[in-house]
Length: 259
Figure 1 (tube, rainbow, N blue to C red):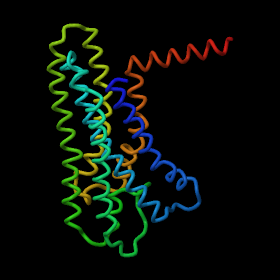
Figure 2 (cartoon, rainbow, N blue to C red; figure 1 turned 30 degrees about the vertical axis):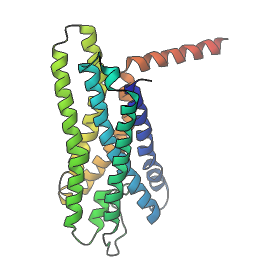
Figure 3 (cartoon, one colour; figure 1 turned 180 degrees about the horizontal axis):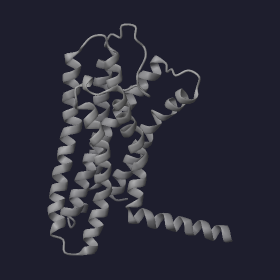
């Protein structure tokens, strides 16, 4: 019932949905005799992956602000991060991702395919679908770049500014215990930010024809499956509260087994 865990619960749910929108169909194509997907399934997969990916970009920026308030304004933390503000920020992240997905999805699907129906990727993603088009669309490139600035460069800039201020505050901390606690709390979020933003920015902020297909597939696999899968482990292994909760659960299970 604290802001950090409220945001973490949203991130966990988001990562679960993100991976679920891609992995089942990918496993069917890997194990099945035919590697195919219906047009409707491709559209839904494309939409949800784009929506959830954009939402995660905004949510990670919101979590950076929460860490800034916790470290730099500890006495006013409860006042600043009140429940109404937390709910509004999370709602803004979800609605922002939905809006960007509607815009990009509608424009991308209007491109003529010229009879080519093979997606050279393990799921329906915007770069792969744009490369299938037989015409060059300057409009989509401009819109994608603008949305990349809004959902990638702007959030990562805010995150870097937040951690710059946090770093200055940490340097002034004389208590080793509190210094270690701050690093553990912020280190998890910073690790997730590095893994997610690093690959997404490289994938979407470069010209679409400058990235090779094999490299594009690897990057897509990284930020759509590997990173969401690692996020719970990253936060769990570096979070003292989660470790204590797991230990209590295991102790209760051992007592129940003995009785």
